[in-house]
Length: 335
Image (tube, rainbow, N blue to C red):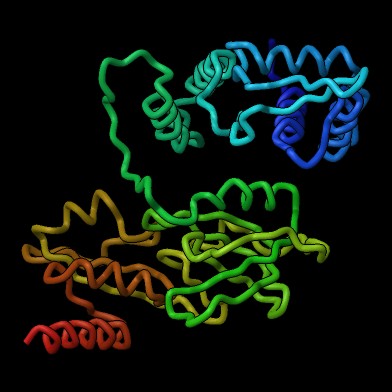
């Protein structure tokens, strides 16, 4: 059975009905639930009884999810419910059908490998093949840097869907320096990963300013009744061009950052530039001087500081003073 978008929406709607212990869902209710879900998705509907029964049979099969479905008699009618209410198709491994479809998708994507505008897909394809076992391997041949225990990842799918379907959110948030959690009404626009942490960027409904929130500091998320404010001004492809990381002060000017990198350490910076604006100013037998055009923010300071004895800050002076103060603080605390 070809699993198209409409089929997935029906399976999700049925799964939600089967897990609902507060209501009995008869066949007509299941049809209505599927039609409502499809109408909300793209304005279509018209699903018939025969299709729903076919969907149920597929979900119960080994090719589907082998769902633990029970049929309960209520007079002359029958209602449907999982006998294990903790079950959900979203918690199950990929089905044989899904695996085959993913293989086909990967095969299609792999045809684009090597094309300049699709370099980003090489890692994604390798990650899927390795983590999902799409290719038959005795052992994993690739290891990716990841943190399985990173807090906040449980919010990722909901935030992604909220961006796609333009949903305003009420987010309860507690930053590291906040004594108590704060509620933000938030219009989500963009998800970004930096330093193995995820951040959501969007419009703060109260301040009317772009704000970023770390996913691992989100306490809870609910959908808001406030209408969604569509982003028509910010191109997030360009938004991060002038910074390292995710801290952006829009009114802050860019500056020319000049650094001297020890010649022995230069190969590391050459092969992994600090930023896309990096260019060589001069080169001697002792160091390579580079220039970057950036806004000074927390992440840039941390990046330069991490270079330790391998770097000398030439300009600007404010950045040099910040780094010297940090170094002096470390010396003082360890004396």
